[in-house]
Image 1 (cartoon, rainbow, N blue to C red):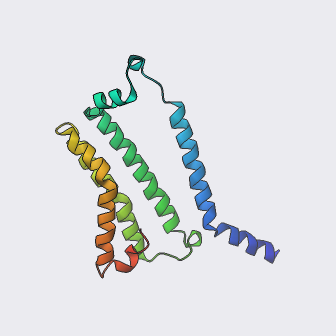
Image 2 (cartoon, one colour):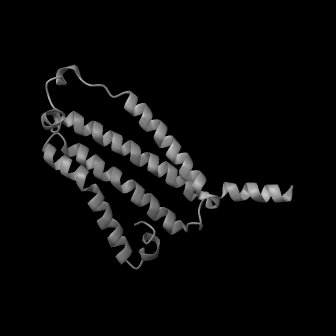
Length: 159
């Protein structure tokens, strides 16, 4: 009986379980989203490229895009928080400082998306540039945090 409980404890601490769970959740969500995609009736004679050149600068489209990206970021924060407070799910427990830094890095995109949404009605191009520049901004933020002695050790795991 003691051997079985040790085996069960080892399985619960396996990080592959979290990966498999999140993969399954995302697969289901993506499948549901794809099932809802429909072709608008007025696009019959237009190519996709023409449709995207026509609607890319509409504020409502940029707002919807921002809302979707914020929802993904919130899901990332929820998953991170869930794992961060359960040391048995990690190879090594996180310090409080590392946990706060992880939450900051997870929340950073939300700020950028909100700014992009605010810019959408005025200059839509600025909003689009901000959406597409986020990976670069994230890379710069992580690099700056790695170069600071106060956050160097904690930021090393966020590549």
